[in-house]
Image 1 (tube, rainbow, N blue to C red):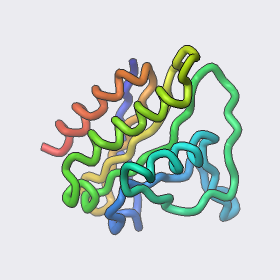
Image 2 (image 1 turned 60 degrees about the horizontal axis):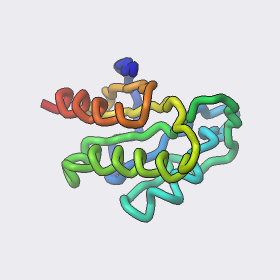
Image 3 (image 1 turned 90 degrees about the vertical axis):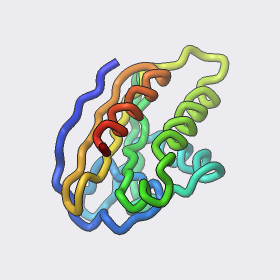
Image 4 (image 1 turned 120 degrees about the vertical axis):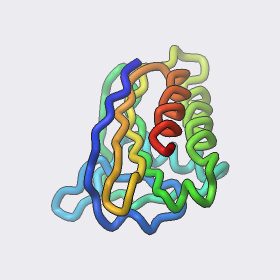
Length: 146
């Protein structure tokens, strides 16, 4: 399991109060998302308030023995409204992976989680490992918020 942490400066994201999905890339005003994003969004919205920052225009086809998850954004407003949002979202993500790969060997998971620290400062957690390791991301995020 690998968790890399990178500090970012982003703007115009601090007003969201739901769990948000960020595009992987934005190119020529086209919002490009990981191939798993749409199906995860449909699954997750049954359990939590989740939205796209921008509607998907293009789905990035990623063929690998690894599962590439969506980039999730946790703003301060979303975490203040629901302090358990990280735990709930990661449980939903873990359940999605279990359901999606039912009957098959679960793959290595790769995803990004972006957490707001201040109005324009964010931390990006790049996770790679088994889905059970997602619990470690929650611990790291909670320690960041202290």
